[in-house]
Length: 87
Picture 1 (cartoon, one colour):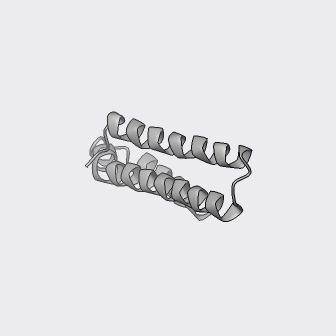
Picture 2 (spheres, rainbow, N blue to C red):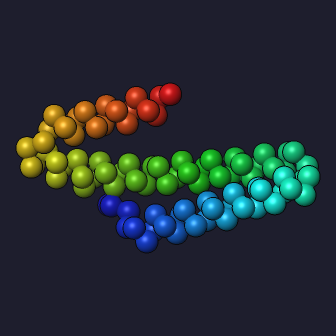
């Protein structure tokens, strides 16, 4: 299932809201542990967005690319993504 643009934008809006909250907490000199809990929540939200985008790519874009005769390009893109994920 491919994530829709609306779903991706909604997830990003949520992430942006969390980031603004973290900025406010830092400006207000909030307790470090409380700030860290919020940064971890943002990281998890970004990871979830990544997961959904990747699943959509693997289930829709990859098969379409292979069917269109772009197998080498598709494999190269996936290799690049996995290399980035391991950094």
